[in-house]
Length: 322
Image (tube, rainbow, N blue to C red; front, side, top):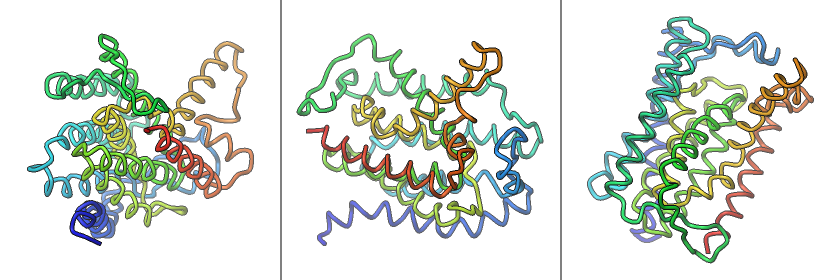
């Protein structure tokens, strides 16, 4: 292994190490502060036993990513907007978790408050892109041989749609032990590989996300000792969307983050069908991972299948770059 190879994997190692150290230090603190998971009564009955498990573990993920990025900010300015989106959406998630867990208000932030915060972070991120990134409206077309298309005036509305959809898709995916962590570590690995190949400058933060999630999974796989909460899931959604835009690859999100997409679509279809039919349900429960649970699938099986699907789609996406 030469020096350049080591530099590529170093952010992964640093972030993994930071998260491995922070988890056993902060999880007991979260438990003592009674930052326990609130489990909805209308959710799967098997989840009731998870009530009280420490949540807001996303704080550990965000800290691990941020600490690692401090070593690379000087030489990799491209990290800044991705780190901003990750932390920005993480703060919204933290406020939501804090209200639910500490203030005992089951729904957390009101829907309009959460949406307003997400729009604000997205707007600032978009403002940075338009003002600082050259040819920002050019998007890579999958399976086109590396060709790009200029979406021009559609850039801003598309960006809001993609970023908000990705962030909330990530949020919906966080419903089983290790599911969000397993799916997103694969997406982060994909972006790490691509960012290195394109010499985009964001590979350190992509590697940092992968490293932190690998460590977090040690405590988050079934049965989970800690949950990431909205703090983690919104932060990770922000990372995925912002990294895709810095790489000019938002069109690839449909592939690599397909699980996010089906989770969102399942909720939309469930709600719409329920209203149209006067109370009938399209799925046993939404998001769709709960549907498979109620069909008798174990949590570990669902996580494994969703992770395998993500792995295959990430490999297909790699083929679609050139």
